[in-house]
Length: 280
Ligand SMILES: Cc1cc2nc3c(=O)[nH]c(=O)nc-3n(C[C@H](O)[C@H](O)[C@H](O)COP(=O)(O)OP(=O)(O)OC[C@H]3O[C@@H](n4cnc5c(N)ncnc54)[C@H](O)[C@@H]3O)c2cc1C
Ligand code: FES
Image (tube, rainbow, N blue to C red):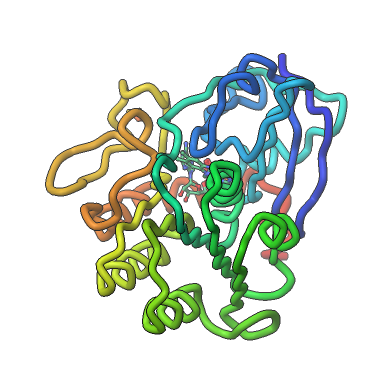
């Protein structure tokens, strides 16, 4: 069993937890993830390692409550335990030889982007962060990004905070004014990553994306997380989750991610309190 040591809500639907998992804390690096089950017989869900405290043996996870398992996890409190917490899985993000990086995060994707930005900063890179949200009330990790960024930009779609527009607005402006990056790292909704890749391509800058398809085993056995990259089949859990954005077939990935929408919506209606409150 893995005990929850700290818990904090970052906004109405995003929760941060520190879980006591010393073996994972010792090995995990930016870009890797864990698979957990809240209780025996529960569904396995992948969550990115948002940070580690090796001395205390703690692993930080930041998750959005979007359905039945994330809601069940959110019902746990400090002192409670979760039954399985397996990792680190996937490959660490490649940050070697990057001197000037741009990290682009969208929504809860910022929880995944944050450890990447921090690792780049710790490796001595100059880090520009561009983070975007739909609206002011769901902004997360602003102070954390500011602390580790040489340049920081925040956008909201509705203009209620920061600059109005999506993350591509400041990104395009920076690139058009001649700012050069060795690499752009984009992490967020598929549609956001697709457009960040298109912007990066216009200026011939390599763009890494972090893919988050449905996963079951996380070890390359079930085939559930397959993607097409440069026309070849890849498994996000063992070949990724990071890929060269230029090669990813985003349209196929979006189609595959929607395959279980109906089933998930039904499950949410049956089991998820947050969703029940919304429809009432
Ligand atoms: C490598 C990886 C890292 C991730 N890291 C984070 C993170 O740090 N924070 C965060 O909030 N979310 C993260 N996710 C997404 C997270 O796994 C899903 O939000 C979660 O599984 C939803 O489960 P649910 O039962 O609450 O919701 P459901 O109602 O079952 O599903 C809601 C949506 O979540 C996605 N989803 C559902 N089951 C899975 C699954 N087994 N694997 C992947 N996606 C699924 C689907 O897109 C679905 O439409 C990550 C996904 C992957 C693949
Ligand atoms: S999650 Fe099963 S192969 Fe990747």
